[in-house]
Every structure is written in C-alpha cells, then in structure tokens.
Amino acid sequence: MTTVRDPGAGTPLDTHLHAFVRTLRERGMAIGPGEAITAAEVLTVLDLTDRGQLREGLAAVLLREQMHRKTFDVIFDLYFPVRGGFGAAGTGPDGASGSGGEGCSGAPGEAPDQVDPLKMPAADTPPDPDAVREALRQEAVAALVAGGDHDGIASQIVEQLGEYNSATGTAFSSYQALKALNPQTLIAAIANGLLAAAGEEGAAPGSFEYESARRVARSRVAGLTERVTELTSVAMAARRGPEAVAQYAAPQLPENVAFFAATRTELHRMEQTVRPLARQLSTRLLVRRRRARRGPIDLRRTLRKSMSTGGVPIDLAHRRPRPTKPELVLLCDLSGSVAGFSNFTLLLTHALSAEFSKIRVFGFVDSVDEITDYIDPSRTLTVDTVVDMFDRVIRETNVARFGGSDYGNVLRTFVRDFPDAVTHRGTLLILGDARSNHTDPALAELDELVDKARHAFWLNPERRASWGTGDSVADKYGRLIDMYECRTAGQLAEVIGRLLPV
Image (tube, rainbow, N blue to C red):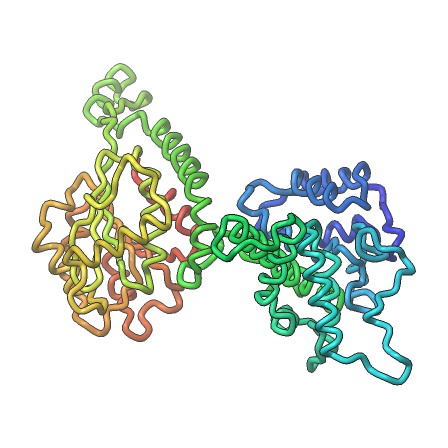
C-alpha cells in the first residue's frame, strides 16, 4: 500500500489510520482487514482538509451499525482533531496527534498568523482571570446568538479556563472549564440577543416568542457544553496520545454496557439494539429449524430397511418432526439492582414473541405474581413503557411484600400458586442475581421446577467471580440449573440465541 504522508506531521497517514482503526476495534467494533484496506484507499480520494467529508467517508467504510456512531465520532475527534496539537506546544507521545483534518494551522476560517487578543498580556502583567472569563462570556454569547459552528469559542474556553497542572504535567478538565464559565447563566443573555436580532426585544416572559428564544438558547448552550467536553478530550489526546484518552473518553458500545452500570440514557441507547438483535436471533432460529426438519432416528423403520442390505443399516429412517413452537416462561427479578437487566431481557424476548407459541411472564422481589396481562402484545415495548409497567406491577400486584429480595420465598410461592406454569413443553428462563439476603434458598423447589421444564436456564447479570460471595447463592443454584453470565446486551443476545429451543 502506498504511504500517504500528512504534510503537517512526521507520521505517515496510513500509520495514523491504522492506530485509529485499532482503537475502534479495542472499543468493540467489528472491523476486518478488508474494511481497513478500503479505508486507506478512501483517504487517497477524500479532501483531507474537509473534516466533514473525511468523517463521513471513514464512517461509511468502517461502521456496520448506526448505533456505534457516537463512539466512532468521539474517537474520530481524538485522531483527526479540529486543531492539530491543540492545547500543547508539540505533538503527543506517538507524534500522531496533529495529523489529519483541517486543523493543522488553527480553527476553520482562522488566519495562520491571527493572534487572540486574550492571549496578549502585558510583558510583566499576567492576565486578570476575571477579565478573561468575562471576555469569554461575551464572546460565547455573541457566538451562540449568531449560531453556526461552536468550535472556535469552545476551543478558547478549554484552553483558557480548562487548563490545570496535574501530577503528570499540564492537563485539561471540562468540569473546570464549564464551572468557571457557568454556561447555564448564559441562557438569558442568549435569549435576549435572539429576541433583539428578531426585533422582538420587548417580548414578555411566557409569550410564544420569549419561550421559543429560551428553548433555542438552551439547545445552543447544551451544544456548546457537549463540544467543550469533546475538545477537552482532544486536548488531552494531544498531551497523552489519542489511544490513552480513548480508554476513558470514548463511550462503550451500547451492547457492551454493563446492565448494573447503565444509566437511563444508556438504556435508551441499548434499546436501539433490540430490533437488530431480534432479527439476527430470528434468522438463527429459522436456520436451526430448517436443519431440524428431519426428526430423530426411527430405530424400528431403520432395522426394517436394513433387511434388504443383509442387516446393515445403510439408510437411516427418521421420524417426522413436529413443527410446534416452544412455550416460554420468564421469571424476572424486578428489584432495583436488577431491574435494568430484566427490562432489556423483556424487550428482547417480546421482540421474539413470534418465535414462541405462548409466553408467560412472572415478576418478583420477595414474592411472585404473574404480570403477563400488563404487557400489550399489540404495542412495541420501549424502555420507558417497561419502566412504567414495572412501577405499576410493584404497586398493584403481589410481587413485593417488604421490598428485600427473597429468592427462597419466591420459588416456594411460584411452585405453590402457579403449578401449571412450567410444563414439559416449556422453557423456563430465570432472570436475577441470586442475592437472597441470607434467607433459605429453597433448593428443593428449584430442583422441582428444573425437572418439570423441558429446558431451564438462569441468566445472571453479575460477574461469575461474584457468584457465591456475600449473600449470593448463585453457586448453589448453579449446581441445579444451567446458569450463565449476562452482564451486557451482547452477552445476553449470544446466550439467548444459543439456548432458545427450536
């Protein structure tokens, strides 16, 4: 492959691209050698001074899932920053931080020899921090009223308000920069500027014009805040190298976020993975059903056919398969620590409902009750609707008595009150962390359920190393039922796709 060199740095551009692709792979993106080679070829035809074109061109070649775009964009900004060597006198440790992009000589539209007046203190007098902060506030208001790109003012905010001395040298903090500027206090000034520009400066609070201006101002302040955070990562990449910064600055892929650590926002991002995962699992089940069209070997018919070959069973006879769909019984832990995991699992299995003849859903905390009727099969479930449904279930059903998890009482109640729920035709799927607050685990009842079910599996959102520690009885349950670690959506989809019967 021809080596294309970036004229603004000493690092070959193909080497820089290789580091970029390697970081994307480390974050979990599936990028094969073919895509990497194609990306290198794309660089020979793209305008490297147009970051928008460069970003979209590489995304088109390297991205397989749109839900990975946010992680891709953050890593792209680290390796192809707006301003090369941002916040640093030189390049990063690997010398590659200033390569690529339009920013080798400054922000877009900035003359190479333009000097920022805020950086010109008198020879013997340091700049007044309050004066610098006030000047930046005025510039920020003017820039946000005008709209457009926030890169210029965001860069100044990070460089002049976010820099501090750490134990390892100069560093940058978006928290420090935003705290000093206090962007939320800019909303009123920006709204007044927008009203003045539209000739409506006399609009009364509560009027349509006033509220519209406030909404636009809040949106632009949120955009500036996000850009300051992103450029802080770029500044740190210039100091420490993009690979080191990507380890904490780039968000996890939605399917790799641990359920226990997932925020409401991350659950919404994970929700976008449900439909693609359901389609993949449906296709996998269809292939397995096609392969299973022949039933098990019919020994009697095989021996009868072997009479024509001297008793040697050359041709095997198979029984006719029964094309019935399995039943599924879900037993979901609704306690706060596991609710996110149960939420996502319910979304996924609901999306696969066409693959089962019947689905019954039971919820529990320290007692158990059926919640199938709370799920409308005609509506698409979302994170918000499931959260609201769980709240209703806890208020209106018998899933919780005192609020603390009690798996022993749950299993005993389930066996006693719902004896017909699990049959030899159904698959039992238990979702929970098996932390029972040191109560009796009811091993005999679990063993009874496992014997009754055609298949029985336990999906645990905790690390396997934590099973059996503290109040966990996962190690004891694991001796009676097949238990699998499912900490992320990717692990969950893999396990369900492997376990679901045909």
